[in-house]
Length: 340
Image: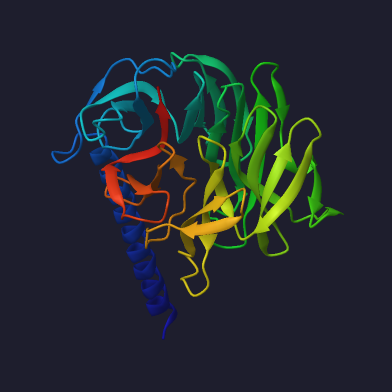
């Protein structure tokens, strides 16, 4: 092949690659533009006031993922009518949780050079009380029942819990004093009755028992553990293996969690379970799909969780005693909190 022909082939290949790249960018831009327009089959959403106050009636506050001008805003619906019209707040969150009149909203910050993230503490009227920069991509958020503590987890390496090549940072904030524990890795660890230290320790998925005690997931040496934490002593104690993203029941007696089950696909390895803390007996829940979420208790009998949907995610409910079957609670929603 002559030099001239080689140059023609190279130029042709470059033009093809440029065309493919341009088409991809245009498709992404078109999809992003469509997300800003209301879809005919989507849930109705209107702007209005959203409150986190404990006594404002039983309701769900969540991240609205329906396409349109209120996409990604915190929205609310009555708990008794979850498929009804939504009221959107104007406050956008990637992850969210609320309790005791306090909310934690993990947000993206658009920068000129690169995007960043921050944790925003909200009062009952969604006004910002404080904010904190985040070192990675938001993934989990919780508030203690009193509203005095907030916790969040971010990815600082990798982007999925399914594999092993990820790293997390989990922080806990005392909202009353502003004291921030930037990472649970600073706590002393007791594993199987002995002090434990390792460079590969990761934590995620805090759930609060009260303003001192909490549960979380610890990963180290290829295993995951349920740990019980104490903020006063700054200690973590392992209780059980193969337990991720715990969520404490309203009465404090059970933990709903996701568990890796042998034989399932590597990218969808989890099933939902409930652990009785008095007997340490596990009950598998009647959800046949892999759930990569930290579930929320609707009440003492039912849990709520997200699964992929047409608009990104839908919310489902399921009995917490192993009976029944999944029920889709609402479409185009993520990160719910039951209030009132």
